[in-house]
Image 1 (cartoon, rainbow, N blue to C red):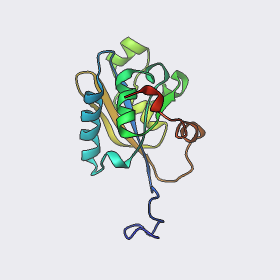
Image 2: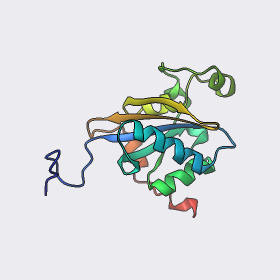
Image 3: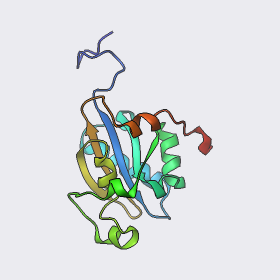
Image 4: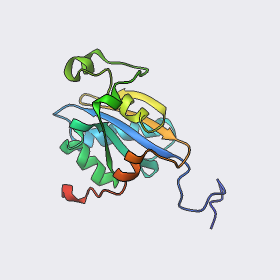
Length: 154
């Protein structure tokens, strides 16, 4: 069966939408979800369009991020420091001070596609959205997409 809008088989994604997330220790899942919804709405997307959350590897087990991933039923993709140290549209002196990196949210998102939404900030969370048009995703994405987040609990 084909989707009437795209001509693609029904149920297949045309784009992989990845949210890059940066967060402080005090962040909570509700704040992650609220900022994510705000970013998605800027492009006319919804939670169901989201493919994964991505962040710096040392933040990937943060309870707020894991909790949001469980609610969204998407994997958390870890990005190593060597991969995240790239040029971004909005480098942050604060992030540089705390992590030694110029960016977390934008740089993590950019590992999986072109930016759709540049970083947006709340009190404890930063979010940026990226999209990849083709389905030939990086191997890290394919591997992480098979990992269940159900171990995180309710």
